[in-house]
Image 1 (cartoon, rainbow, N blue to C red):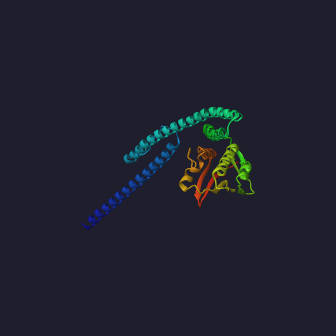
Image 2 (cartoon, rainbow, N blue to C red; image 1 turned 45 degrees about the vertical axis):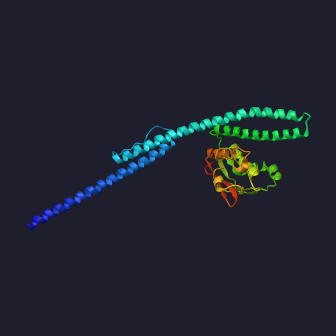
Image 3 (cartoon, rainbow, N blue to C red; image 1 turned 45 degrees about the horizontal axis):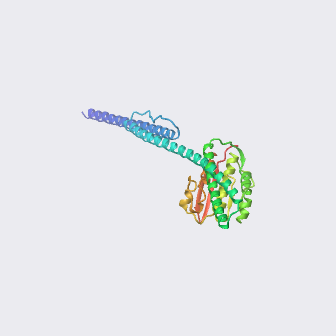
Length: 307
């Protein structure tokens, strides 16, 4: 009797252990399938965000909850794509509007400038001469603004046509700074320049890089606090810094926004730095602005790739 009891207990123990192991195995398989499905969802979601396709997220698992999660993410993806298309269409319409406005402004402004030059040659009273001077000054400001709009429309419409080649950043930076020698002298600005002895070479568009440097230096000359420090490091980082007491951290963070201007820049459309940001990013670089201790620092960095 006791022997039969022990056999029965032994059998029960074996059965319990087998059931326990089966449950553990089932749980492990479930966890594996869930982890695999999660990785599939992650990879598919990352791919759908950067590719322009109507393909939705699909997973190999038949698990109801996981498929519900994938379907929910597909709903959000559809909304995201709709918003992105609307944004792209609005951005395209804005670029077209800027191009049209810039062209529409240039023609009458050219005519106005021509008539003003003719008017200056006529006999006139001192008051009329003063008024003409004011009109001419305002016309020159409008001409400058229309040129900024035109340059922006050209840059945004041709930004995918970069001609990348090995470029020595030291040389382009030196040439850009030298081009402003006359303005530096006029504004009594003595640039502080730090460059490494080693050539810093990156795959860039030389013309675009020169335009970026010119935009930044011009911005400093026009709206800075009368100083300029330029530092180029061997790792391809360029920092332009100057006193900017009229700024704050919030304004510094918005300097690269299209059409954003600060109070000191009322004669600008705010497109100069936006153009610089577009060009830097098209060259696979990064540009940021930081305001600290009354100084504005604009940092540009280009990754080191094989030339």
